[in-house]
Length: 409
Image (tube, rainbow, N blue to C red; front, side, top):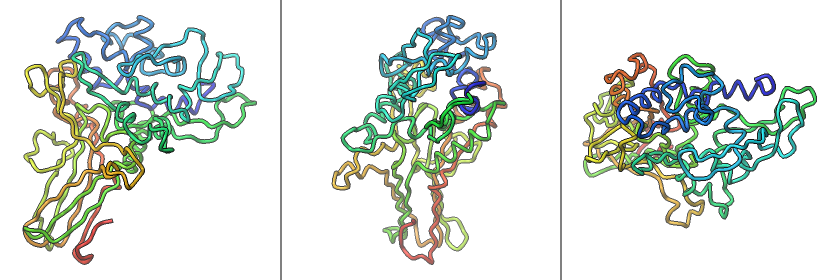
């Protein structure tokens, strides 16, 4: 914080800094330990408190309230001492023991605080840098189910294909660059530095630094993700509403990340002269997805099953999953059949309409998991009210009959 105040402030409100404090993580970890004993003690903390685990101040995350703050979360030291990635998932990062902190600056300044060195793993211009981020953001369950797949999704996208000239690493999207001082040293030159907010979809649910900044950053990122279209046409029943959701700008599937608990959906509403005549995908901000009696809507997320083929939120018990998400772009060639990868859905409305509205919404974690954790005593009940429901502003489209049968935008 003394030498890198801007980076520290950004990181201090990030989900990396929050990783050990997140009450959802704490609750799931506690429930896993209670139900499995010592079977998988470090499964969660290997990513949520990696320094604490490797320094042997915790073995399972059950004592996180008793350990020093600098051991919690995904720290500066953990990322910047990484020297190799020795796998694809569940944090196979090897840390250096040479006391050199690594970064993407080719000619770091000599200083009295620590040794400094360049590393391609930390250079967002290098395609291989994605492996360091991806190794923690791909999770395989103890039963070999690939329950988080962000890195694998990116690897299958055009953004990871060096032959297409459109490479975007994790840092390109999640750590925007700027020209600034990398350190507070008086003689520090201007550098290309990167934002350490590392925004995604998850947010802090308890008192934490930079909360408003983090939530605004999430909204801004979501607003730039999907390209959507609403077409209103004459149909067999009266009016057809054709919806297109194109995952044009995420470098991975959408939604992504903690897919067993994440939910996104499409809401479409139609009116005739001020009276609602059709609605699908309408979910109250505090309503659990499972409580929505709707079988025709577009619902995006994972549905996970245990050995008895029963739906489960217990990631340690997941043996298989069924997923619905919008795949990432795989080619920038319009002549390639794979170019048209968007999700298309048509709703038929009886009779004519005078207005139609659509929007896409997303929750970092849905209330069915939250309610289960509250019921089991692992999560404080006040956390429920802190779960946000985001609307992608780019997805809010409205058609009115004065436009005639047409597509918006």
